[in-house]
Image: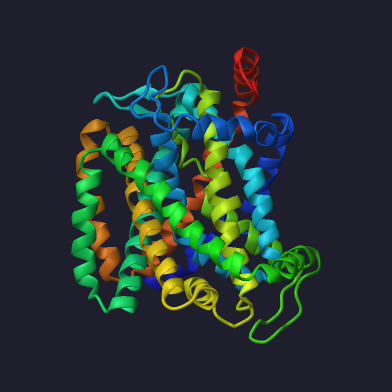
Length: 452
């Protein structure tokens, strides 16, 4: 029975995270880029000023958390193990050229994330407990008159969250602590349950208060370490960038422990890892952005552009370049082991291992608390606000299971469900294109100051 389930899931997953889904997500990203007038490029400066210039401001209008708290929580969820291990896996499979295609997925993903957030903000509503809720399920119900499809998306979210946002992250933390310090997994499991409970039991406001300081710290911690490696190996940068661009279109010949890669392998691995990391098109981040206190959907959409820029263009790029300039990309290693090897080779003493291990712990834990809100939003849509607290308790139970077990079948199924979230989400976004373009014209027509 279990083997049959595994075979079925593997077959479905091949489509969900294979070329069909890649083509759908990239095609929608390209379409949105064209129709919005490349808003993610033309308004990038405006987006950066909007976010970085208003970090402590409350914003105007309705909502439950400050705009920056919303983007911090979304970044907490998207910046995860994939930014370290996922990028390394992409290079292992697709060669240096995978980094180029990762950039492409990020640049188009900035437009997709912007669009899905704008639409979600327009259809958000206050739940019975006074929390502002939004997301693809509300778009499908209120905008398209398809509450059943909204329920499908909500169910996929509530279930998938236990895998990709919970157990995988908890297991990564437990494995890192066991490998580095010899900490028993059950000890890590109990510790994670305690520190997670302290944050998520208080709901979105509690989560947002933690992520608004945790996310900038962990991003800077990792980026400073990565930039230090790049500075120390600056002479290798031109060659590394050259390999990235040449490998993107011609593949990479076999070198050392590296088995060789074709252009198609580079494209598939780079795009897939990029989409997996920034989650553009999956409909996850709009659920927390919808809780932001803001006066216009497009204003919060700018935070979505910033979110993907930080996740993919900054953090994933640093990981990829560190692996390239240190020359370990063809060592035969993959995943987190490859990233650790790169940082250890690039920094003196124990600093390299400290940076990667610390980054893994922070990234995984932040994803753990951020995704709890996504899953909770799904279950609240299905069962009402009374289901929120029991869901948080169940979340804590799965944190322990994830830390102490290797339930790969559950993770694999959750990975498939996570990818399937894109289908109803993109239906909602595409059907709302006239609304999106109207809101964009309205906002920038009245916006004042530089970039307005």
